[in-house]
Length: 90
Image: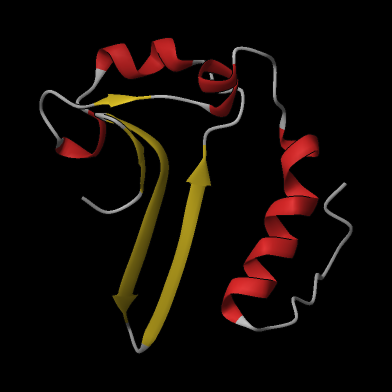
């Protein structure tokens, strides 16, 4: 299954869309997401699978501001690239 998983629960969704000679991609890392919304849908169309967050897994509140810089640093290291931000994400 595409994404980042903790057991049978998805922590991060990864997607790619191709069309009109353009490719776009992205990800959604659940930091402190209200997971009750997922009770009303079948996330990613996967029956019997759940959704989790960093806050749930770590047992403490983790918001995006705590994750953004280390995530971007790791992304640059893994993909051997330099990110150029068009605006300050903070």
